[in-house]
Image (cartoon, rainbow, N blue to C red; front, side):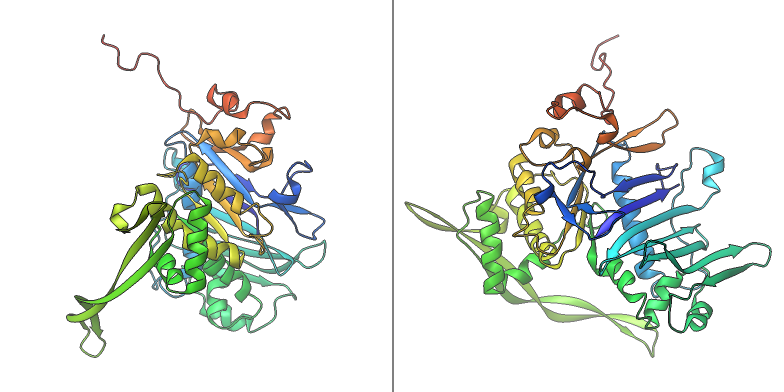
Length: 422
């Protein structure tokens, strides 16, 4: 599970911003919205967190920051080529920040042990990297790496907690690759679980990584999976009795690369095409509809159904930008509640989402105060992430009204003279 994410000097997030999923001592909804960790430093973690903010406030940049960190971990050792630069964007509205590295750090629990991992980077290289592992109250520094400009080399320091071929991994790590990523590729058993958390357990959906139907289609092909998705849609009050996947072969083209000739060619081949047929049943009869006959809300919920059910089963962390897009507010509430149901969320899955749906703030027994975060920009156009709990709202305070009148920030400043003639 994710305890904390830190980011500094990434797009509009100039100063260090911290998103924490460590639950406060508030006892409300503790049995549903939090999970016990067994750790003294963080006894309970939140199952979800909602991030609010005006358009262009920077809340999407928070999602992109975690997504970018994931991408560097997963791809730096294999996809990124020697000498290749990164498209990372520091805060560019002051010259000092534009010249400084971008920094990322996550703290996660893996097999009951807290891991604190982070790195700093420029477009040209990794400038520092570190991993602390808390097998006891005092952390073990498994490795630390920093770039020495005077020698032009990376300096490594290893702790006794990290076992394996450390010299081999160090020598194989390029200046634009992460040591974690390279060591995992070279079969480090100790570092593989942390790499796998980024690669497999952290799932991000936004404009750069859109939902696709494939996960849901694969689940629909299995009788058990089809029942789970239909039950999911039925619980959202969508009257679909059954969904059939019709697969057929159609003419298509695939790209093949000839390694010997060093060129690619386009070949005509049959490819599989999947069509979905939705059965709707009423007291007066049954009708079958195609995917495009369904509403945007139903289609988006179907796109979400497969990934969400899979994430809940595997105990992964889902990060999604604008969860409320094309979904009725009641559907958004039910999606969030799935992560709060111990009978459904048996693996400790977490949901982090941005939204404009202010009705969630006062929805009965949906969110604790420590699950709500706000993003707003200051006069220098730098984004700040603020916990609602910092405003110490009263127990029964009307949060939606307080938010909309600007008591907590995070809303657009709308000029009263918009649309007037001068």
